[in-house]
Image 1: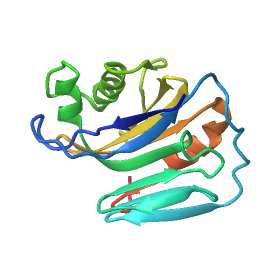
Image 2: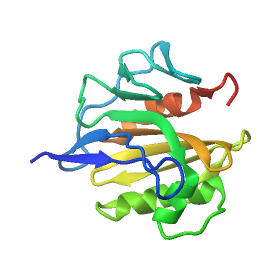
Image 3: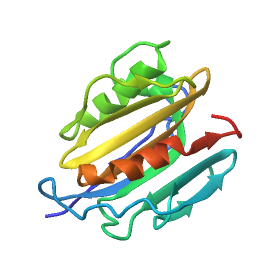
Image 4: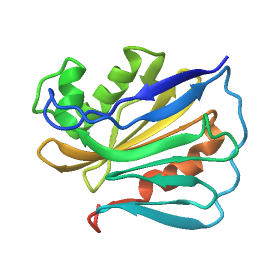
Length: 184
């Protein structure tokens, strides 16, 4: 049985929310199609945010966000790129602001876990550019997440969901291919 799940990314101060909806259909087991090889890249942008990704994904460009899915399993291989308030993530997960970007990523997974079986694997990894990556699970899906701070509480987040680990190379291409204002 498929269940629709909406993910809400928090934007602005803790009271102000902007909704980025990623719709995921959740089924059973670590199943689903194996990822095809990464064979070529393309780039899509919205405003000053661009994402380079493997060829073959369907990308929908919105005003300040991108959503995407893969035709092999569009209900379970999907993701989004959009603005995120680190303060909103941290405070809505029960933490206090100010907090580090790594704490904001951990809060992202805490919030997912409030209504679903979700969790982070290990500790968030801080990259040399100050962005933070983490992986985990959401119900029976794998989830990869990268948060790129932009100053203060502002950040850009990218999330990729897929039914199994064979999609890791695709997720790594998406997360590494996130460019903000020509340099992040």
